Image (cartoon, rainbow, N blue to C red; front, side, top):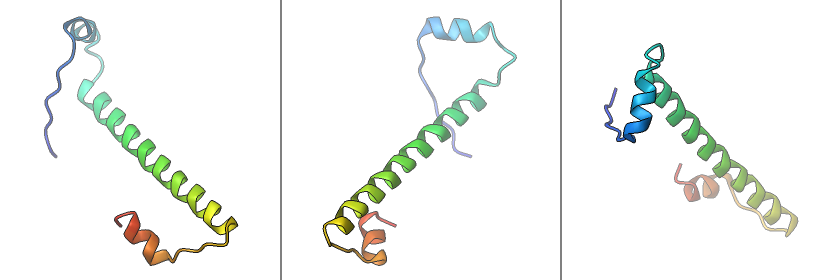
Length: 72
């Protein structure tokens, strides 16, 4: 697993220290994962929306061309 160092405001750090029952690295890990998953979902929805617009306009794109465009 990769390591990451974060800087947080001192006031937030003080509040976090009062709640040692939380594993803050796990909280951060879950937040990062959720944000990345949200970004992927948004990319997918944009692709679907674009494909629907192109389909309505009579344009088509092959599956392989779409994957290439998405960098997959």
